[in-house]
Each structure stands twice: as C-alpha cells, then as structure tokens.
Image 1 (tube, rainbow, N blue to C red):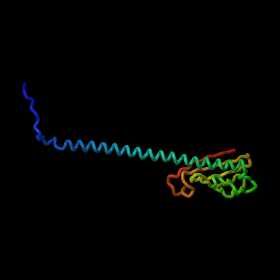
Image 2 (spheres, rainbow, N blue to C red):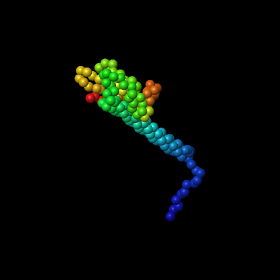
Image 3 (cartoon, one colour):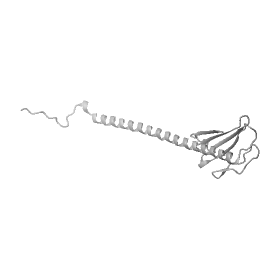
Image 4 (tube, rainbow, N blue to C red):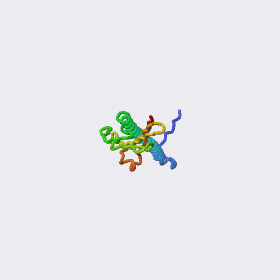
Amino acid sequence: MGRVPTKRRGFETKSQRGFVLMLATLIASLLLLLGAAMFGITRKEIILSSIGRDSQFAFYAADSAAECALYWDIRHDLFSTTTPNSSSTCDSQNLGTIQFTAYGVPMTFEYQPNGYCARVSVTKNATVPTTVIYSRGYSTTCAGIATNPRALERAVEITY
C-alpha cells in the first residue's frame, strides 16, 4: 500500500492567505445587518403600539366627556334654553358657566378626565327638536395639544 501524502503545516500558497479573515468579516457584516434590521422592525412596532395606546386614551377621554354632557343634559337640563347653570361638575372638575345663546349655536366646555383633554360642544336645534353632543378627545392635556407633535384626536357624536 502506498502512503498518502500529508500536507505540511505552514506551507500555503499566496492565494490562500487572508481567506479566514475575509470570511470572518463577511459573517460579522451579515450578522450586523441582520441585527440592524431586527432593531428597525422592533422600533417601528413599539411606535405603532404606542400610537394604538394613545388612540385609546383619546377615545376614552371623548367618550367620558360625551357621557358627562349627556348626563347633565338629561338629568339636570344643564344645556337648557332658559337658565344658565354654573354648578355642574364631572369627575370633580367644574365645567364652568354654560349658557344658551341661540338655537344652532354650540355651547362648549373643556374637561380633562384622567389628565387627557376633551372638548365638548352641545347644539340644540329647534326645527327638528334634536340635541347633538360632539366630543373630541385628545391623547394629551388641553395645554399640550398645540405643542405635542404626537397628539391624537378621536371624536364621539351623540344625537337624540
């Protein structure tokens, strides 16, 4: 039987030098690219979920304010066409004096349930006796709406 020739250590051709270094650099670059892509996707998902959360806060503020206006109109006739009322509160917040001026002209107030802004307008119509409560809720405080670039608005409308 013949002997199989063995490779001698330390004997390399010029074309083989640096192959391991180039392979390691290529693999490291691919892993870095994969990590950066995963980071970008994760960042976008976090932003998307925070927008969904803020949208819910804005909707809850609008819904809470609309329910407050509905309660005060039905139970206490707050938005009456005759007498102004200044003792109305929602969530221990005074709504201020609300006075009827004319049919078709909205009566408005601001309310901040749990620190989120809600702006409400109540309009009484005479031609077809209806009341329209339009409530806009925001994902920030009333003072921060103009300065917050991520402030979201959601609206609720009640007609009866």
